[in-house]
Length: 77
Image (cartoon, rainbow, N blue to C red):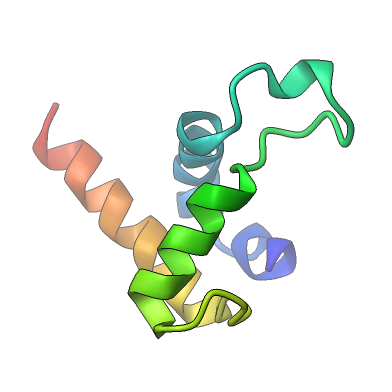
């Protein structure tokens, strides 16, 4: 996933902003000390996207989501 995003510099700042927006509160106080979303949020998103709570994210879906976020950010400036 990070390799696919790494190959698209136009999405780097959007990916970082989305990571910060969806990170667990106080993420810097708990291992793994990364701004990752909480389990409940990820479960909700995978159920709404794929219909299953344990479905792994599909790379192209994440890239499309980040592209959509980038477009929305530009529209709302």
